[in-house]
Image (tube, rainbow, N blue to C red; front, side):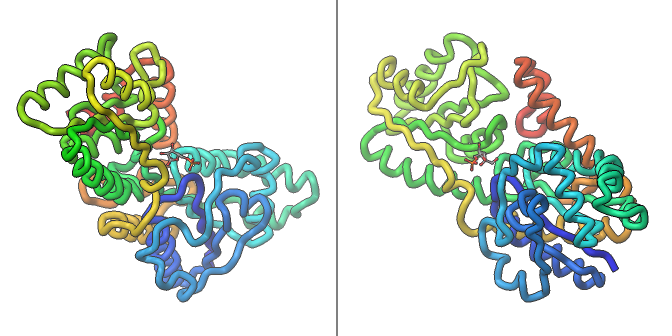
Length: 363
Ligand code: F6P
């Protein structure tokens, strides 16, 4: 009988709960024993692992966040922390793990998988486990689902929570625009996304923003004038408000962060606009999961169970969506590609970043 644990890690996202529900129930139907690791990797390090039953996940399909808790674990980033995690997995006889989290959390899952054999050897040397236990736990099945509002992970076209975050942003911007129009004001809105501009780009497209600032395409020197010009064009054609969306990781061509305050000052000084800032913050991560997030997370979670039962668990995978199909991608490759994008941003190789991000960024 498989003993499978689920953990959610990193920033929460709407759709994590529907994924927990679908995974638990699909695994129970297959005959597995299912466990929740509480508070992300911290729960692995501290042995906070509880059984999940059919009823444990009732009534959560329409709830945001994650009922099993999440955290950004500092201890799990150390080898000592991962050794404790390995010990606790073995102690609870868990041989399969579903991790729902962002790129950092899935990088952690990949690392645990890569170090698994050597961690077990150390535990035998420490006499924490015996040879027999070592043999029965030689493999750890790992499967990842990308839970993040940022939509910044390779291996999937959409991450769990990104769609709901877009709904939150759109609702907020629509509300702001109604007051902006009355006062003929300009608004500078900061949206989340860490180093990824996806949320800013797609929300800009769907709210009719005048100007969008993204980490992937830093504007060229003198961009301030180009921005003012583009806003003025709108005003001249009768628009009674202006909207600039700033992704939180936005930088200029020298790599210097662009703050919403700076953009507001430019609009006031260069265009003489009455400008205001709204930083949307964690509103974007909360609320009720959208149809899309319930739908994709449920499909992905069922596929994760299928993989643990029928796939080659020696090769950890990430379950993603591609062209409305649920797909499996090697976890290691998805992690490597995602990290490569981060490195390219740091090296200011923006054309390569756009190529790797693909999709809407390239269009
Ligand atoms: O990764 C999700 C995210 O919401 C990012 O968009 C944001 O930069 C970060 O998490 C905020 O983290 P925290 O909730 O720890 O402040």
